[in-house]
Length: 135
Image (cartoon, rainbow, N blue to C red):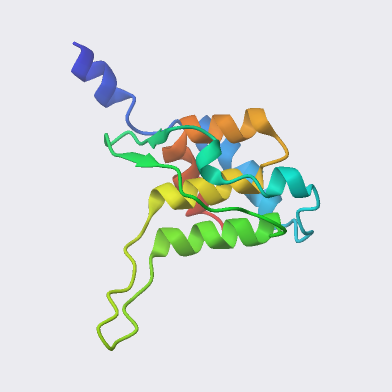
């Protein structure tokens, strides 16, 4: 019975995706630099232990800082992380898509709002679904 309940809740709800999308769209349109230096200099790995996705994958937080990056650039960094980086040649392996880092960059776009940032940590599948809707 527990497996059935867990499987049924694997996909994010439409309301959760809409909540993530609304906040990601706000960030996508905010080109102002992060001006709260102490807050923006916080390393992502200070935000918690891990992000757990509905597929069972667990991703640790990265040792990365937002610094003065705009919220728009945070969303662009998230989109780039989600795409990965193709090999550049000369033995370069490129980088595979990194949905954990993508969620962390979206969280960084909301660094001024700790409850929302935490909600995003606990709803990573909704964050990824909404990120795919940003163009």
